[in-house]
Length: 179
Figure 1 (cartoon, helix red, strand yellow):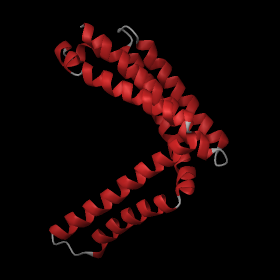
Figure 2 (cartoon, rainbow, N blue to C red):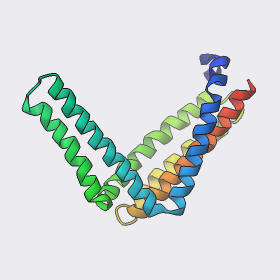
Figure 3 (cartoon, rainbow, N blue to C red):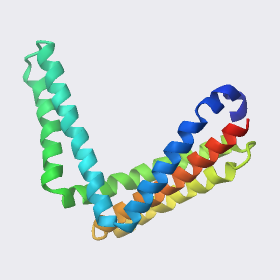
C-alpha cells in the first residue's frame, strides 16, 4: 500500500512546499482560463525557451568536450532552430502542442488513476481519482477540437489541469501537515 512506502516525517517536511506549489498552480491555471490565448502562447514561449536553452547548453558541452563532430552540433542546431521557430510561429506551435497535450493528458490520466488506487486508504484519495478522470476528459476534448480550437483550448485545458493539480497538491500538503 502507498502509505507504507513513505515515512510520515518525510511527508511533513515536504508539506509546505506542496501547499505553496499547489497555490501557484491554482493561480497560473486561473490566469490561463481567463486569458486562454495568452495562456496558450505563453506555454509555447516557455517550451521555445527550453528548446533554445537546451540547444545552447548542448552546443557548449559539445564544444567543451572537443567533440567537433557534425552530428553533435547538428542536434544543437535542431534544438535552437525548433525554439526559434516556436517563437516566430507561436500559433502553429500551439496547434502542434495541442496534439502533444492530448497524448500527455491520456498518459497523465491513466497514471493518475493508478496512483489514486495507491492512495485509496488515505483520506481524500478520491481527489486523485477525479484528477485522473478529468485528465482523460481533457485529452478527449483536445483531440475533438483539433486543430481549429487549439489556440483557445490549450490555454483553457492547461489552466483546468493546473487548477486540479494545484487543489490536489494543496490538499495533500495540508493532510501531510496533520500527520
